[in-house]
Length: 481
Ligand code: HEC
Ligand code: HEC
Ligand code: HEC
Ligand code: HEC
Ligand code: HEC
Image (cartoon, rainbow, N blue to C red):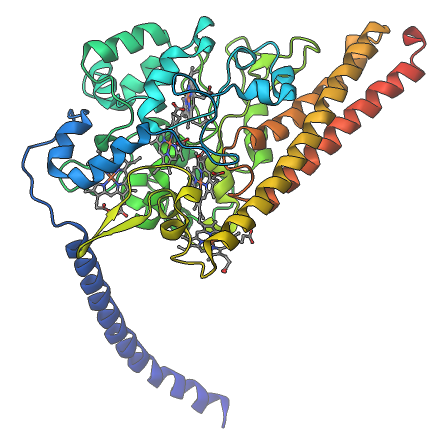
């Protein structure tokens, strides 16, 4: 066949291909709509007995309409404990993490976390535990409440109707005054229905400005997000408007994003507004890069505190569950936080999401066995293997940090100059940031085992590099001998 005939044959084929494609698209769309409709039917057979709106923060009111979800939500007040999850200690107060792992306390010296840092517990306690913590003996900002109360009406009031403007005011306010306002307005509840649900449609949605802005920054940045297809789609589009979580994210993504309103690394103090450090992505070194490029109002490079014994400018990590989940195989496979932490319960013909948010290990049958066809004992053992390995790596890294701190102190005592010590202090900052990123995460490595192992490997390496550098200062500096 000549080139010419080949070409004309191809031209002739275009309309046919287009027609076939159009028909196929129509069929698929119809099918999808049908499935979506049926899903909606299956999920929302509720009778609205009382009206709830944007200012209804009291979950009991919603409970009248949705008693099954409300009754399981109430169970978050129950004590739960697994080998690494839930909490030890009494009902009055969970155990201190800093007593269980003395290296934690050592690395936090100079910061409020060395005073009081306990096991987390159920959502029912979030406001009360924050109000009680001894960390409040240091001045804290109003930003703290973003993740510990049902405070959207407070933000709207502070911003004259504009929640984002109100949110951006709270960092300049004290915790005490913000908390008092919350109580005075009658919204002193832990995370409530209205924080995750649209009161009109009951669809899940995100309310917290910290996440709305954080994910906008993530989308605009270069960090890889294969587990968030809607962000990838937005990036490929015209970008004529910022990524909008409530408009762009899929329902599957929302089943994790509602949790990412709070279970993330953040900065929260009176220097600047509550910030999620995702401009370069969510991996540990990407967040580090973001913080390194951030300056405090004093003009200094960002740090959370100066280590009391070494003066290293330290970055403190906070519960990066969303970030580490993002690096794991479950996220990559489209398995959401809610799949494991709020699994479905059958209730006659309908499915109800278990609102008793807790360790899935207390619930392997509904949380894991829907996908993994192994016995409960086998599944628990697989998790234990991952967590024990992570725990061992954590202890090794903790030991390396303590050795580094000891060596820095000794090197300074022997006369090393601040200039000589500066690169060593930088290594402490880097090592500690990595160690803390895994230690502060609450799944003991489960959400992304290979990633946490990689991070802890780096933490040990950086700490030992610092130690070697300090020791060589002791040997080579005349002033030091
Ligand atoms: C594939 C299942 C799975 C997914 C998906 C998942 N988790 Fe987990 N999560 C676990 C397991 C297993 C543990 C360990 C529980 C334990 O040690 O008792 C855990 C632990 C936790 C803990 C500590 C629980 C406790 O009782 O102390 C928190 C908080 C948490 N996950 C939040 C999240 C968030 C937020 C997401 C989504 C960004 C998420 N998880 C996604 C399985 C999952
Ligand atoms: C408004 C902020 C906020 C949101 C939204 C949120 N959490 Fe939490 N979560 C917290 C806080 C704060 C605690 C710790 C409470 C305490 O220790 O008093 C916590 C505790 C937990 C625990 C530990 C429970 C236990 O019994 O030890 C798990 C598991 C958990 N959250 C998972 C999730 C998941 C999954 C989602 C999304 C479906 C989610 N959280 C949404 C703030 C939040
Ligand atoms: C971005 C959301 C967010 C912000 C802001 C936030 N927290 Fe939390 N907080 C959480 C989550 C999630 C947990 C549960 C996971 C954990 O304990 O690691 C938690 C747990 C706690 C706990 C119980 C465990 C512990 O650490 O002893 C206390 C107390 C607490 N926060 C106090 C504070 C204070 C004080 C501030 C302000 C400086 C603050 N929180 C700001 C999300 C947040
Ligand atoms: C931390 C976020 C969060 C909070 C707080 C929350 N929910 Fe949900 N809720 C979810 C998620 C996630 C789903 C699953 C939605 C989906 O897959 O579309 C859900 C589903 C539902 C559904 C749909 C049916 C079902 O069970 O799947 C109802 C109704 C509901 N919740 C009621 C409530 C009520 C009532 C409260 C307060 C007592 C509440 N929720 C608090 C996250 C939350
Ligand atoms: C919605 C489905 C789903 C649920 C629910 C689920 N998983 Fe998975 N899990 C997967 C998929 C998909 C993979 C990736 C491997 C594969 O494709 O088989 C995986 C992988 C794993 C792995 C191997 C991890 C690795 O790093 O290679 C473990 C362990 C695991 N799951 C445990 C659990 C546990 C424990 C739970 C419950 C807390 C759970 N899974 C819940 C779908 C699920």
